[in-house]
Image (cartoon, rainbow, N blue to C red; front, side, top):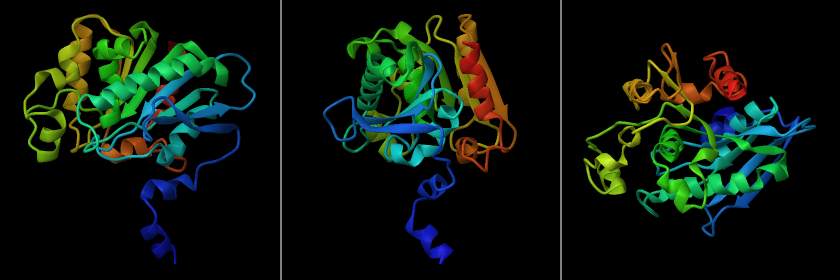
Length: 271
């Protein structure tokens, strides 16, 4: 019966069953745009003593799949530590292509900044974060400030960036869907690394040495580029951890796999 149950559910939905529900509450389906996928959930810690830092998280899925409902563990991981966590859906391919998901990310950020205080968050302490394709969105919002400006947001509002196993320098494209998604196999303007032309907000870039989906060289090359402009960057490399394992280590019961949760909390508190 357990096997039939697991087969009927997505793996992330099953993992949600292990996530504690106490210590926070969730404000669900807050619309930052008119499209059904332009919504986010905000995880609000109970008994906030003061305005809390905020993490806005974008999940991965090759810009083609994903749901905020699957990331209960991420919200709990940080709300349980007194950090307000927002998890955003965004439009996906083939409904949209580049750069629509970046525009959605910017709009979600503008919404969180405008409403953070309503949920106990400090608008001046918003961090953008993401895993895989979501890390691309988070880093790109800081790398190319035009997206935030067009959404009515000030790029200076980004207090820090957390990129988890992100693709930042991945040309040329070979997958047909990605070529269609990005409008070509070799468009340098689509790469976050190419938009780093000066100092950017502090970044924490994390990757696992066992990641064969998004090679860790993406993290190392972006970190080197940031350092060349004296931009503050912390790098966390986890031995033997793969592309899914790194985000799985946020989930209760798997947190022994890496120190990612502690590293993110330390990064947020240090800034």
